[in-house]
Image (cartoon, rainbow over all chains, first blue to last red; front, top):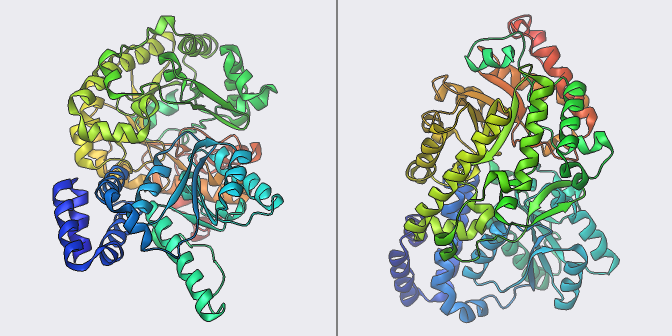
Length: 231
Length: 350
């Protein structure tokens, strides 16, 4: 219910209403509960609605932006809610188009994830170096142009060559229009929207916790299947 | 030309027209790098003529690359060896820069002059044999390249006065650029407007912004236009698009071309909607199936041009697939489309 109210305020670009809803909910239920039961579901629903053609990309962007702005003062506290989170890196490989990357970044920050932003237009060699230096465990790569998407294959090869094994998650238009492309380039998962990035990270976090708890009872990190989101 | 004009009138010509929007493949034809190829009008002209002959294309495409316009505004163009040239860092760094922004002069912009020269040469070689298709970026979509997508959306929502000023500047440029292309020999102009797609903005936002810009701009152009959303969705606004004065709509692979035709009241011709990204890996057999399905869907009654859904075939699509597209439209696109009503056997995928 709270998530729905928040979602409506965000889609109306009503920053004041969104702020009132969040402030009241945090006072009543605490930050942890608000992030998990309001912000994450609202952003996921908006992202899914975009995939289904029910809302526009500008709605998704503005919603994430408002959420991130409202949550910014609480970011240090929010990040503490996810103490089990992996070290996350984010980059737009080769491309200078950064909207997709920015939307993922805003959605993750709003949801309590700490993200290292490696920028846009970054080369494979530079990205591998950044992954190594920061000991990245989950690498989110955004692309808009097909040649950039195909360079993920080079990225995977160079990561392997350097002995680096981050979970490689890709997103962007080429992967949306060719649902097999993420496998072709050697990624571990693919997201169609920023909401998918949230789901994938939640899945990874859950698996990490599960692995620790249940001695690998769960399956390994499987690729996120984008097909349900396209239905 | 007759074939295209007939289908634009929503009548059946002799065959479904094929607009294979190949740009970079011309570099392969000439054995040049993409950068070398686009450096000279002569290369593009020769490439387009060779590809028209090879693929039996029903148009030539005078589009060079997306940043050709912002290059004239002072933006950097970044070349890659296996894809379209990309726009570098946006040149509008601050919103306030819009207040001082003036459009470049067409006749003083080398990047635009080479396009005009190509169109003049194509016109001299082809006359009215096939349409020479030019391209402009819509005033509403150009800011993505001028200032970056995120900052443009911020502007759209937060600074209506500056947004309006930017539109007016861009409209002047777009009209001058399109009309210069018509004078040079372009038969029609593709009005690329991906930001107007409901993939990017809502119908309400389109009605308030992109639609108004399109209507004002297209009314001042001295020739016909095709509006293209570059893979974006258009069905929820197709009624409005048909009121902008455009004749053709580029359709996304995610949409049904027959529905688009119907929703426009047969005022728009559907251009599309082969998936260029997937096309890299199509077999000849699969290509034939896809083309046949597109023709069956949108071909009856005319008002349909077979093309890709983005307006630019990726460099990675092999020649064999492009030849298979052409073969399939020549095999299955001949009117009347009797095979659709013949034995059920004819309906099954080949």
